[in-house]
Length: 479
Ligand code: 5AD
Ligand code: SF4
Image 1 (cartoon, rainbow, N blue to C red):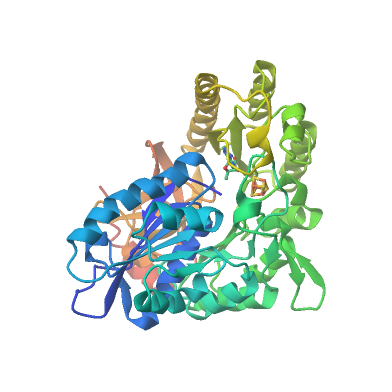
Image 2: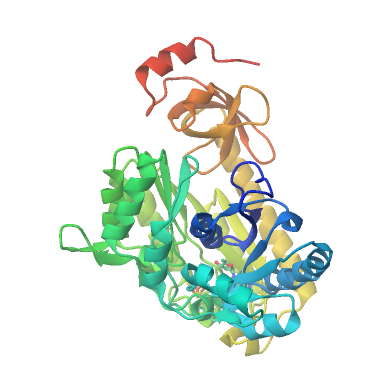
């Protein structure tokens, strides 16, 4: 899961204050939270709530929080400080709800540190939001719900699901039983639970009918997903992907985040055979030293990981890899850190995320001896990031001049421009007609900018009506 997102759930233009009520949602942390925020907005829609992008205009403010590293959790408290002023100045009532992993992990502390918080709701209790809002309205400050009941939540949230856009997240699994010694997720998100195949397929069909062309299956350990399939056999994630690929309208499938230990042969075979499965895999390794991997309780060695990558590349030679790393785990020596650099060099990542170890209360690593000092962590992070940046730049440069299939998602900043994604999840902008949104067309990579690729469409779109393709092709604007 990524911690690079800090977004607001937006849905069209801000609503008139006279019609119904307004909800402002701020999302911290990973894609799972983005998904949950979108579902909360869906759930509140029938109650007359429309999303707005200004907390001052909102009747209800939801902060959907992240607890993975200390910085992420601290952000909540500084945002609450700012909201205190907004709430004071606002004419009329403002209800503030703290949702997500901080709510789960330290709900009581949130309420005691911030008296302006009316509702605390954990990740497994979002479906009870309407009830909690009503309760908070009746008796302020009494609403705290952080119980685990994952299946119930999924079913309740799926009922109100609405799609906007070409690409959609679809949570298939939640929770984690791996207990890496640095990580709070097993405590905040609970045990591994898989949604039933039938429910996932039904939601995917509904999304495809609404114009969704790319599905990103989400789970803290997405490749631990298991369920009884439509044919009565036990299915793993590979089977699920194949079934999803048969849905009309679904052109691309991705999944994240995977654990090396759950990367089974069925999934590797599906990656090799199923063209709709994108050749891009996020497979965190965290460290390259076997001693540190053992202390982290990862359950594999560096050699296991490299062998696994070899197997995946044999099955899908064009696969690009992404990963997560932690530097400065307790006891990590200079030599251990060298092993991390060596592993990254051996793999060659297309993109990767790296973090300084952050001591999380209640996790085993927090009380381990030989904590690494911040200066050393900074130094190691800088060295690792320089290597990973160079790898990413080399990967992008290797694509220049090639044609890649691009799924166009939305208009770009300049008139006539569209933004799409390559199979490797890179943003690409190209001049193309708006009617190509939702279809895949080959684009030649012309160059690389700081956070995107520039391309030009060099062939016909797939997934588009032939009559539209013809008429629009003649007037594709060019710079
Ligand atoms: N400190 C630093 N990074 C962490 N991650 C998880 N827990 C911690 C922590 N305590 C990182 C891991 C994980 C990603 C989502 O966040 O790399 O894969
Ligand atoms: Fe955290 Fe490890 Fe589970 Fe990933 S696999 S969520 S890092 S405990």
